[in-house]
Structures are given as C-alpha cells and as structure tokens.
Length: 640
Image (cartoon, rainbow, N blue to C red):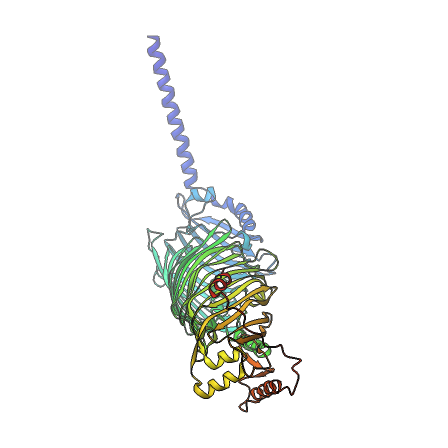
C-alpha cells in the first residue's frame, strides 16, 4: 500500500512539473509573440554603428499588431553617418522602413527579411580606389558565402534616390529607384563612367510570394561612349547578387574599360565586342562561354575564377580561330611601340613584359589554341598552342607548339618573378622547317633545318632577359643546296664566281651542312662553331651577335676545295641587325646601291693583290679548307 501511494505522488509531481513547464513555455511564447521591439532600439544603434564604423540614429522602432512571431518591424527617421574616411554627410537617411522579420532571428542576430517597405530613402554610396566601401567595409574584410540574407517575398520602395561615387569602377552616378508588386524594381541613373557621360538602368521582376529563392529575372544596362554593357539574367531570390546566372554583352574601345567594372585585372586592347554566359556563386565566377572579337582576333573561351584561402584560382580554356597579338595593346600602347621602333629600329626579340612581381595572390591554368596567327606584314609563324600555369608569381608555359610555314617550334618557358628581377628560362626546339624559312631567300639557299634556343636570363621583358641571358642558340642544316656562285664567294674564289655567273647564274651546288651554333654569355652570342660546307667550298665564322641591340658582327673566312686562280682579298662580313642583316665585302654591302660600287672595289682589291700591285694588310688571308668537317658530329653537338 505504501509503494502504491509513493508511485501516486511521484506521478502527480511529474504531471505538475510538466504543466508548470508548459505554462512557462506558453508565457515565453506569449512574450515573444508580443515582444516590445522598441526596447531593442539602442542595441540596434550600437550594432549598426559597429558594423558600418559610423554613427547611427534611430528615432523610433515599432511593430505592428499585438501578437505575431513574424511581426512587421518599422524603423522611423533613421540615419547612418559616413565613415571617417569618406567625410561628412550621411550614408543612409530613411524616413520610414518596415520589414517583416521572424522574431527568433531578430533575437539571435541572424536576421532574415521576408518583406520590405521603404519610403523616403536616400543612399550615398562611396567606394575608394582600393576597394573600401561604406556599404561593405574594408576591402580585406569583405567576404561572400553565397547565401541570400534578404529572402524577400515582397518589396515596396517609393520616393527614394541614391548617389554612387565608385573610384575603383570609375563610376559617378545619381538617380532614383522604386519598387512595387506591379512593375517590380526600377532603377535609373545618369552621370559619368571614366569621366565620359553615362546612363544606368536596372529592372527586376515582381517577387514571388511564398518562395523567397524563386528565380528573379533582371536586366541591367550601362550606356557610355567608353562602354556599352548589357546584362540579362536571374538571381536566386531578389537582389541576391551572390547567386545568379547572367548573359553579358559588352562593346568598348578596349578591354580595360570593361575591367573597370568586372575587376578581373584585364589590360588595354583593341576594340572589343564580346558575349558571355556567366554564373556567380558566393565569391566564385564560372564562365560557361565567352565569344566575340578583340580587334580582328576571334576568341571562344570558358573557365572559372574561384576564391580559396585568400587566393584567386583561375582555370580556363581559350580557343581562337584567328588571333593578332597586336590586338592585346590599345592605341596608346601601339603608338608607344611604334615610337620605340622608330627610335631603335625594328627588333626580332619581342619586348613583351614578363614582370609578375606586382600580381596579387593569383594562381591557375590557362589552356589555349590559336589556329591562325595574324601578323601585319606576314610571318613564318602560323599557329600557337600550349598551357600556361601560374603559381605564386612563377609562370610556366608547357607543351608549347608554334606552327611555322613549314615545320614547328616546340618546348617550354618559365618566368620566376619571386625575386626583385624576373628570371626567364626557356628551351625551344625547331623541327621540320627549312633554311629558306629562316633566311627568307629560297633562291640562294635551301634545305631542311633543325634548331635549339636555350636561354636563361634576368629582365622585366623577354628582350631584356635575352640581352642578359646565358645559354645556346643553334640552327643546323645537314643537307640542301646553295646557289653555285654564292658557294664560290663563300670560298673566296672570285674567278670561279665570275665564270659561274657568266655560264649559269642560277646553277646550284649541294650544301653538305650549315652549323650555325652560338654560345650565349651575358647576352653576347659567339660562334661555337659557325661552319658552312658545300661541295665546292667551306667557311668558318668568327665574331659575335650582341642581343642588346641585336647587332651582328660576323666574319666568315673560307676557301674552295681546289686552289682559286683569283681569290677575294676580303672575307665575307655579316653586319646590321637580326631584323635587317646585310652581307658585305670590303665593308660595302653587296646589295648596296644599283651601281654595285662595293663589288667593284672588292674585285679591284682582289685583282690588285693577284698582280702584286698592293698589299692586303687589313684583310685576313684566304685559308685552305683543310679536311672536311664531320657534319653529323657537329650537328649532334650543336643541338645537345
């Protein structure tokens, strides 16, 4: 009996406790449902002031109705001042703003807004050139996780205006905006973009009640003489720019103008006309397609730009049916290049910048393929493909292949910008091409050609790195033909050259090998060796090529395989520059002037020597050829 009584009182206590707990929960729910939000005004001012680093004033904070877990909370006559770095004035000045907010999210600080009604709103948006803004704070603290903090189902805005001074995007605009259930959101503004007159319009569809993450179609357009940009797409909920899909069309005099808006680190180019399909997720961008023209170049690309651990990761594939590298410079850049060429003369080695020391925390891989290279004035280069990879300011070009008129150039290159001065390293091999492609004169010399370019040097440009570089540059032809008269000239056999020219000036002799091998030391190339051997003659070269200026100072001494009755008194000299070389005898260009004065003087000197009428003190004596060189061995050594 006692046990039964104990159990009875135990069960009774549990019931009483449960009823009491339910009562307490009911009271808490009643309190929450009727929570007096006005007591949160000072806390809201303090929290907003800390968030925007500016003073905040709220005249009054009220709620609608007596009881609701999702009340409409209204802010009356609120002001948010500008941060100190902006100056005087207000960032936000609003007469009345009402938002429907779950009371639990308000208490926890994780506010989710369902509906928003605003009247008499004035916004003064400011961002400096470093990316600090009064709406998102310091640039280094700005983050995006892809979530939509608004989750709006209703939006009403009237009697509201804004101004935007964005030094980073070169925008200075002011205008009005409104929103209702019939027209959706409408924004119109005018001002300047990069100091040129500009107009901005934005429209967004009506919101879908009951589904805050429903696709929200929108359209934005910026019109200016410097940029015509149209964006159409959808966001995952109203104003959720962190999750959207868009199609962009841009026309501008240069890619740099578009970069002022998208901030991708692009550079000045020729005129652009591009269309792209893009997705934005949090801080990541996905380029599903990008097509159009830059100058006369045609591109088709896709890729992604991701933000991970404070770094930007790029992965892209670019295909181009036709491409002109000159299109990657704007008019100012091209004019500067032309002025530089006029000052120093044309150059073979490009002056392309390779200094990545100022590049931010960006890594990535870009695969590219150019089907047809466009070069003003023509070129032996026809196509180009490879893979660029960048990791902590070390850039590599791998699997490079350049198609030539005949043959190809393959290899790799690396630019290390981790030190004060970038260091370029490269090894390129030439296969399947010909001597006439290299020299550009098939009527005089021809034959299959192989080559090696292996250079390492410091410099801010490719030209500067080669001018300071060490390594080897070699070209080898182990068969072919040469115009027969030139073979006699190579052997300094003036008599044989004259007789051959009189008999048949177009006759050819076999070319056994041409070994054009140079060792590079601090940008100076010296023969190692330079040998040309034909069935008639052979010659060896001495001198140098200074890559700082691309100046040629080569002397070729040769002899025929049989003694010459009349020898040229002077050796062959190759002078000028890599882009404008010339061959001379007696320091006079063979092709200089129609009168042929240089040739006549060379013949006169040679006849004078043969008759003993003058001494040849300044010229090196003609030497016999000696034994034939081992062409195969020299070729293999040159290309190692």
